[in-house]
Length: 224
Image (cartoon, rainbow, N blue to C red; front, side):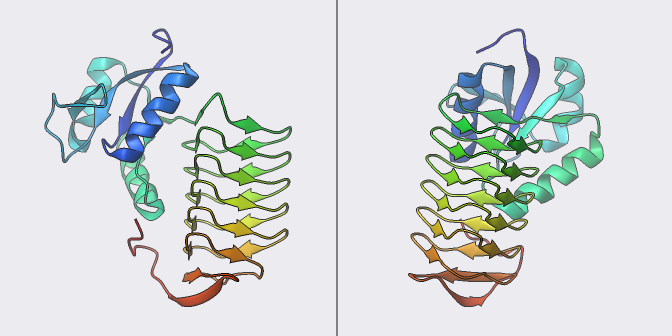
């Protein structure tokens, strides 16, 4: 880990936070001071990182420890947005860091938004744009000239063709496949192993081979 880099914390202490901490440590650009989690006791050690306190403690912890950056490691797309917005309302100068595992590939002309993580073995091919607070998970692939809007996610092993558009807060689950040129609406969940061959409307759960809309869903409906 880079001990001279920007001091940061991770919001969260669960499984997703564990993987994000690993990415940050392998990338080596930041000094990870500890974890923020309101459901853990301060002083607990999770995957080698100390819980510093809860969300309400964050302003004082930032001041005392010269913390200037945060990664919100919450797997649920909607909750990640809500928690991030709440933190930045209180601490508008806190930077949302972006982190990329060294084994990931980023093609030419790729743009990454703040607060996004690119996991081990992920591929983001030339000309693709990834928004704020996105998750490109282990071994997933976003092909050329595709777009992931803010707070969206690709699950482990998910693969898109080129010119795909995934709208905000949509979750594409493990091993799903998306054909070239497809648009998936906002606040959708695409089920594990699905093959998406037609556009998907906003606010639905869809799955299958081929992928079909199964029912509507609300943005705050849990899916993890």
